[in-house]
Image (cartoon, rainbow, N blue to C red):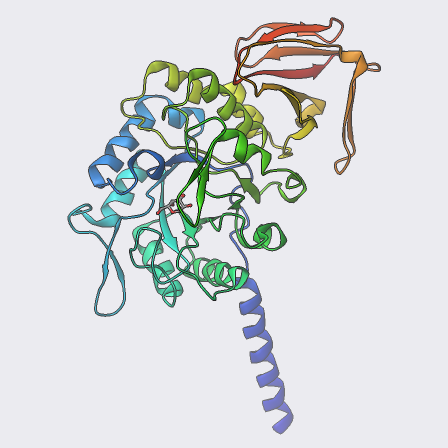
Length: 406
Ligand code: GLA
């Protein structure tokens, strides 16, 4: 009898242990390619309400963004009201009078997914209620609303351990049962590459982006960064990214005041680096040139390539830098970036160059193999049998997709 009881309690302990283990993970099937979508922060900051979200959902469909692959519609900071008497988080009743469930239903009816924002501390960066101490409760609330994506910020977290805090929310989301893409936003401060790949589907590598080419904008204790500054902070990070776990270079500023050349360079670089492509402009009123850029299927295909290998910097520290990215089926993409303020006449002898992606054991050798290329922006074509001679405008890129000739 005693033995039987012992066996039963061992079995119970084992199965509980098993259940715990099964819950200690992120949703494994999400983010196999970098997330694509839209977020309210870069353009609207706290000026958000349900009408904006509904109109953005409509525009994402009518302007071909959904068809191009943009899927998540993410509400950033400032949607929050107060917690009710039981501690349940509620949306701001003035900004979101119909409630989040109705909004999620609307967004889902358009074939899109809804994302929301919270913070690991007591308060968000905007001073609204954070999830600290309410992680499991908030995760259940989000699941009941039909939320598909959570951006989880790192303000007001003094004394907290980042890995532990993000693990708690990961486990809370998993326990709530509704698949949620978990977007870690701790700005790269606590070596996220050591722990974030097992916890989230992406992690911010830097502080906030700002729509300038090469500036740092100081805010006292923190700064926001221009396109080149964020790019340069990615050094050494590529080996940590792959399907289901990406380096996040922050949301796009395309259409938010950069020049057209800069927009093209910014978008191409984020695509090559496998950063999530989360638009940050007003897609309801964007000019056609911006719409065309954001829906360039050939550029998006580089970002969404199933191999999921981030570009490497082949040539750096020069006015014209070169990035290359292995793609599925032995194809490659090559990006020439003109960082400088003058147009650059750039000659590139294919056969003088061979590119190696050491960790992935992949080589691009133009002496032994001929590649046909297509310019993903101009659609011009050529091959590596002929040297390249190109004029790259200032703050712009040339991006070629290379296919081995059989
Ligand atoms: C932080 C994040 C931004 C944005 C704001 C909102 O700064 O890094 O992306 O979410 O908070 O307050």
